[in-house]
Length: 244
Image 1 (cartoon, rainbow, N blue to C red):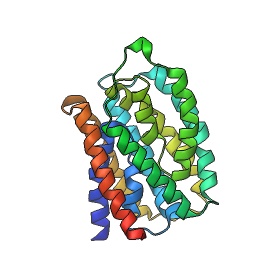
Image 2: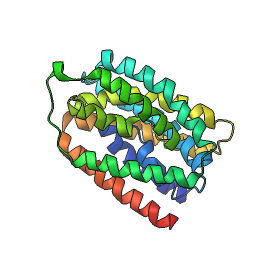
Image 3: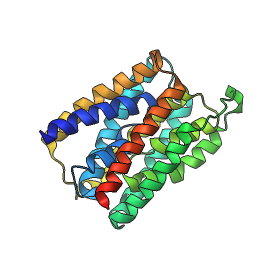
């Protein structure tokens, strides 16, 4: 029964995160934390694995409609992939309580950004060099939290001037490889239920692809961001309640 709840919940979260090209880890961490006690050795490795898979299928969904700007996405991906493992190494020795504190602080920032309107700039106004520089600390922090860099990279790209759907497409690509590279430091100590993980990967892949296609076809940018923010607050508040 518990495994069915986890699979269904992850499927729903994957649809929503796929709409933003985030990868599912940022919402999966508090959700999986409701069922698994060990953040670093159970929740983070599984979340990173699922993040890479869901982000990959979101890339496929966005690329079919031309929203992945490859000339921007590829160099950004190189930066995120090489720096994310640094945070994962740090997580091996840091007290899990402090990692949760950092996570909750990041949630507050992300939700704030989801509800703040940002003026979309013209193509020539986008400061991509600044995006590359910001990607370094963002990726290190994401590796530490075990969530992939998408949760902070997406609002950063939007703030710097990318249109929301283009930002989501670029973000999905920039999130995929670092999710797997950040997983490497966890491999020796990871405690993963491989049978459950397989079902979660299938559910996450289908959900994230559907989410990306829904964004492209039907869903306004503003509503996507706000719905994700509300869901994230609900799941995180419940996780805080379980920790008190």
